[in-house]
Image (cartoon, rainbow, N blue to C red):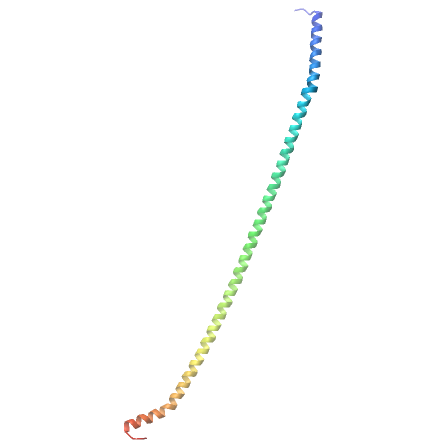
Length: 144
């Protein structure tokens, strides 16, 4: 196959058509599509970055919430322990007062009983002479 000059015109015409088509397609198709893809990529990356930021913020809030819950639990535990200690102190105080009151009541009762026994003995001593006379009179049949 030999090279003919009219083939050169065809080749040059095809090159010119290709360049014109390339310029037209580049301007009206390739550049807009590339810009659209670039914009879509930029938006996607922005959305992904925003999603990461929201996820990071959510994690920070979760950790803050967990710390607040831990602090609340610890505070509640301290308060319960303080209430239990106060209740134990109050319980011991009440038991001590009840013991002291019981001791006092027992001492008072013993004192009253001792006084009553002493009074009863004194009364019996005073009455022994009279009872003895009455028994002697009843046995002897006459006044003594």
